[in-house]
Length: 244
Image (cartoon, rainbow, N blue to C red; front, side):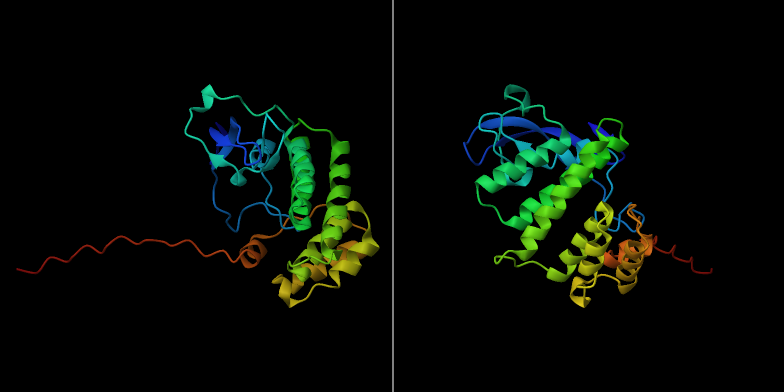
């Protein structure tokens, strides 16, 4: 199942790590590498053309409803057609089910914050594809801000404070909290590994009252994600014939 150029989803057989129940679900089988020309926004997420792509990153057990990143589920040798399929859940709502599972199993707060951010991005992708509700975007954005702020302020925090302060600042700017956005942007330093130009641009946008998404130029995508230039293989030179 090709949902967008080079993005391929396939039915996979997996086992729930919580109840050991085998079931079938869609899995992201292949995807193109991130390149400088990829569509990436200032909150550092890659825009996906179909919400099914992001939704396939989450698996939901049909037996116990445990949900998490599909990478946490072991593969099973049964043919997918012989197994019970995963429950039909809207793509963005799968991230909500995963957040509930994460809280139940005491997963790190940053993990649930990242799930909330993906729920927000997926809700936007649903609306862009004509299958979502625009009101859900604001709800997801509010939850993403709440979850990331809670993670940053918790005593167990061990992440890159500077980088995630930037991301939180950008989420606040998108939500219209411009004062809060500037306060977090100002906490960003060189440890974020982000271009100073980007941070200053987002501060200016927040001070100007701009809450619209910002698409990063290719040069910034390349710099932020440390992309290597493509290797161009030149053909072997044709040997010159010796003169008679």
